[in-house]
Picture 1 (cartoon, one colour):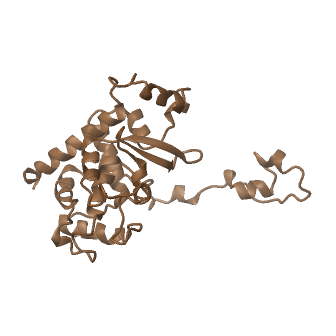
Picture 2 (picture 1 turned 180 degrees about the vertical axis):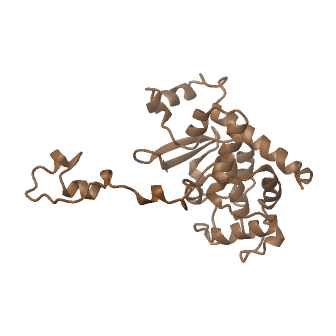
Picture 3 (picture 1 turned 30 degrees about the horizontal axis):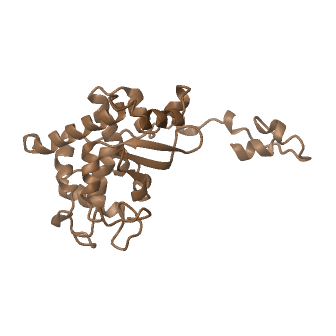
Length: 264
């Protein structure tokens, strides 16, 4: 759409492109009918989330060392992908955010995960300071590289210290051993969000966690003001709604995992 509009000096490019001598008569995609809207085979956006029965079978596999039955090439001691999947579930994060996470992004003094750039529904990527639950912090401090890392090291590296990969294979192994199917890594993010909503977490808070809204812009405040309140300890007795939501999520997941046998 932007390329065609630029060529045609259309919409926001009507003034920017007015100085160009040539104007092309190209189709306006804003006015073009999408044939997919009439296709009965297309059911819309994906809404897959794991239920409590599926989670009760999946969660025991998301550990480190990796369960021996997963039979991964890296060996159970070197494969932290199952635990990384649990971290995705606890934080409702995207896989590409987790893969590039460095120890410098884990703010241990405030228990936040600083994401330098996250996708947003509208607009350019922005940074996010995500408060972590006690369960997520405990997971990070249980990693084999915790305590020996440098700031630039990846939190979830492969055995060579590089980016983790081959996620399709580990997901298929979890499918096989948990006897579940038809879900992938991004569905863990949706599952966590669904659980929080079911537990009564405000939709706005869930949106903030998913980075669907830039809260300080919405409310007319600033990140500098938020940091000032934090540094002057004015927020010490204020419960962060996102952290409270994550604590509820972690508690629910723990209950499902401990009660797994009753769902069989």
